Length: 85
Figure 1 (cartoon, rainbow, N blue to C red):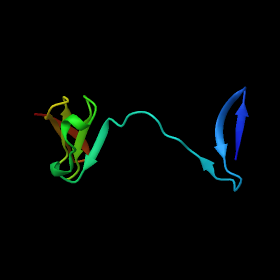
Figure 2: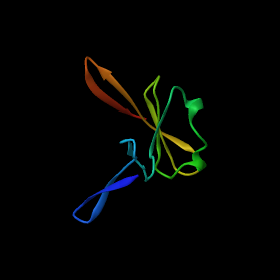
Figure 3: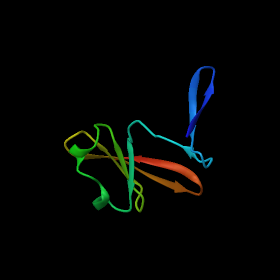
């Protein structure tokens, strides 16, 4: 494995076979599931995390204790419409 160095910074790791190795870091603040039953416990995610129910487009936000309904997203004639709960 070797690193590609540009201006003194390592910008990529490449295996001997030529594959690029990628490491992701950070926090996932948006979650998606088919139904509300797919939501994790509100206290198991970071405060402020959003969960979107794909089937209904209902969106909730975790306050660290419970999921709070934020809004429903829908499109009418191709126009995005948000209904605040």
